Structure formats: structure tokens, C-alpha cells
Amino acid sequence: MLAGQPIIILRDNVERTRGFEAQRSNIMAAKAIAAAVRTTLGPRGMDKMLVSSSGDVVITNDGATILHEMSVQHPGGKLVVEVAETQDDEVGDGTTTATVIVGSLMEEAEALLAQEVHPTIIANGYRLGMEKALSILEELAVAISADDRDNLIKLAGTAMTGKSIEAIKDQISSIVVDAVRQVATETEQGIYTVDEDDIKIKKQVGDSMDDAELIRGVVIDKKRVFEQMPDAVTDAKVALLAQPLEITKTQVKSKIKITSSDQMKAFSEQERESLRKLADQIVAAGANVVLCQKGIADAVQYYLAKHGVYAVEDVKEADMKFAARALCGSIVNKPEELTEETLGHAEAAEEIPDTDLTVISGCENPKAVTILLRGTSQLLLDELERAVYDAARVIQDAIEDGKFVVGGGSVETELQLRIREYAATVGGRAQLAIEAFANAFEVIPRTLAENSGFDTIDKVVALRKAHADGAKYAGLNVYTGEIVDMFEAGVIEPQRVKTQAIKSATETAMLLVRVDDMMITQTGRPAAQ
View 1: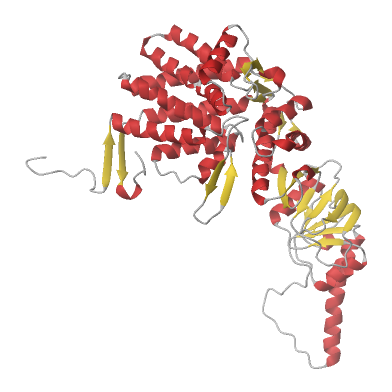
View 2: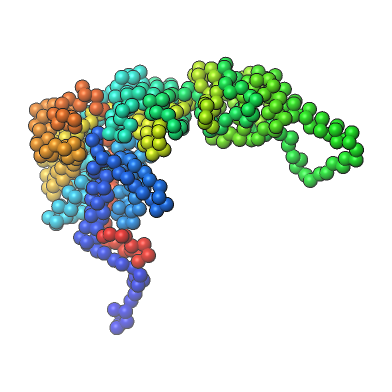
């Protein structure tokens, strides 16, 4: 009120929540989302079935996929979903871990807020704890090289453990490791870089998962354009054409007036001769396989078939560029530009029977490769694709960084103990926040034990004792319930996965805990507060 007159600050359709209620709203949202994916964590985690309004079904235990399919309305909840999406984009794995840690950090913050610890102190303590955690991770990291195939296979196996495709985990792990190593490029400084776009995943429904294979080349979702062409070609020399193998239309409108049958015959012969010339130029360049981004005229198809050339038309631009890298060839605009240097080379090109797939394989030193997955159902193939994607990104992270850490709750237990020791050296109220940050890591071994059907208290206490006795690699064997050396057990994951998970989870928790005023328009209000 000012001089007896009301002053309107906010519009009528704005709902405002202040103080502890606003903080509690965000805390409850983060805890709810963490609880939704918590049961999927670990090798013995369960799957979620998600059904969209259109009836599409997704069955997965991939945290990023689950959260992406969920319709989250709460603004604080959306931030937690972004944590998982960022984790997936940056490192490709550890999405569930990051989400669960956010929920645990917010739960610890709730207890501190109830004790009237100021949100700024909590955020500062979390920041100090994060910095200490990252330095401890550096100490716990173990070096790995691109030539260490055995440990790389263990890394891929850890990423895929717990998925529905675990029966062929060893086979897929080998395929993924070989694929990433093939496309990895070493810089002058001796550092490896990997472009994830150089590994393409193709799916084929109908065969067993055991038939998955690594194609040192490219798989095109097209079959040969003409049945009279050979269905397989050995010692493939591939021409990559961007322009159509047809009579091109003129740029301006024009008409041809034909007044006799002789003129018609001459015109037709000239057109056929032009098309035959296109085919002859391809054959003269030495090509026996043609990938054309545009259409191929019927006459050109006929002439190419006469010379035993395998041709595919209407190939996507992305597939053309990928094929150029895989086959070490160059894309040209016209057949007359084809030379021996522009042709791609492979051992064979063939059409897979009863499918619309063309496989060009056996490249000597491909810059891009394809992983061909097979399965009895689309749902199974989709989950297999997600597992392969996670494994490929994990191997990429390990090769680029050259470091990994052990899993099974080992790292989290070590972080908890050492950060609590560090908290005692800080003092003040910040010590409470750092201790709360350390306690948040207990959620990982506790969840692993819970999802595996073991007593959580017994296993967490046993883990603490093992680490207190100096066994820094001690973790929980989720199959036997024993506390074992995770390094010897081969349960390992890239350091980047843990680092990114801790960073993104902590920064999100720091952001949410400092919110003490939520102003939401009624049209965009959260579903639950």
C-alpha cells in the first residue's frame, strides 16, 4: 500500500512460493526423480517399461532414456533431467549415478536446512567437497593405453553389465573396442582423439544377437537398383557420385519441336548415347560399385549391369560422407571426374538376402566403421543399440584420457571416508556441509546392495572397514555379496564418467539449494510441489 493505494507487483496468474517451502519443493522433486531411476543402478538393476500416449513402448534401464521419456513438469525436476542429459552427451554413461547423487545431495541439504544452516554455507561446503573429491579421483585413477585391449574390453563390459543383452556381452565388448581403436587418431603430442560420428550403428531385425559383427566399411539402407546387377562384388572399387546419372533438365524453359519419326528416332538415340556415355565413364575409371546420392536412369542401370557393376541410388548425404571416410574415397559430382584416386576400395560389396541392406566391407585402413546389430525384436535391438552406444563412448573416454577408476561402490566409499577427514580440517559450519557432501556418496554402494538383495547396512559397514584398513579398491560383488578387489575383478570405468557425474550433480545441487523464491505462472506451474 502507498498512500492508501495498492501497488500490484505480480500478475494475478503468478503463484509464489518462498523460503523453506520453495527449497523443499525443489528437494522433493530431485528426490522423486532420483528414486524413479535408483532401482536401475548396477548389474542387478531392474528395467523400466515406458509407454507413450501414442502406444510406443520402451523397455530399458538406461537412466538418460528413462528420464528423456518421462514428462517432467517441475522446474527443479527439469534441472535434474538436464544433469542426466548432459552426462549422456559428455561421456555417454553414468547418467543414473549422476541423478542418484543429485537426489542424495538434496536429501543431505534438507537435513542441514532443517538445522538452520544457511544455503550459501551449504553451497560453499559442497563446492569445497567437490574440489576435494576431484583431486582424490586423480589419485585413485589408473593409467591405460589404447593398446591395452584386455582392460578396454573390461571397461566396455562394465558399461554393458546389467543390460538385457548381457548374454553376448563379451562378444559385443570385443567388437566395440576394435571399432573405437580403428578410428582413434593419434596426435603429434601422443594423445588420442576419437570422433564418435566415425562409428555408425546399424540394426537388422530377424537374426540372433550372436550375429552382431564389426563391418570395416559401411552399411547402406538400400539394395541394388537393378535385379540384373550382380548381388555381390569382390575387390570393390567404389565410385561416389553426388549428381544424378540422368539427363539433366535445362535451367530455362525450352521446347523441342519434332515433325517426323526420323527426328524422334535421332533424339532418342542421342539420349541413349548420352546415358551410355555416363555408364562408360564409370566403367573406364575402373569402378565396379556405384553409390549415387541422386537417381540413376533406367538406361544407365542397364548399361552398368552389362558391365557387372553393382549400383545403389538415392543414398543419403550423411551415408555418402560416411562411406567416403570408411572407403578412403572422394565424392565427385560427375562421372568424368572419377579417377583411381577418387575411388573407394573394399574387399567386397554385397546385398544381404531378404533385406534392403548393402554391405561394403573389408576396407584396408578405414577412417570410419559400422557395427551391425541383429536381434529378434525391435525392442531388444533398441536396448542393444543403447548398450553399444554407452560402451563405445566409455572406450572413447578411456582412450582419450588414458585413465580409469574402479567401480562396485569402491570409489564412492573411498571418497566418503577421505572427504570426511578433510572436513575436520576445515572447521566451522562449512564442515557440516562438507560432511553432508561426503555422506551423499554412500547412496551408491547402498543402492548397489539394495538392488542386489543384500542387507544394505551390513554391506556398507563392511565396505567402510575394508577401506579404513587400506583396501582402496574394495567394492561390493553384487552376485556373491562379498567385499572384493574391484580392480582384480575387472569392474572398471573411465575416470571421466565419475568426474563428470560429480561435477554436474554437485553444481545442480548448489543451484537448487540456493533457490528461496519460486514464481510460477499458473499456465506453467509444476505438477507437484
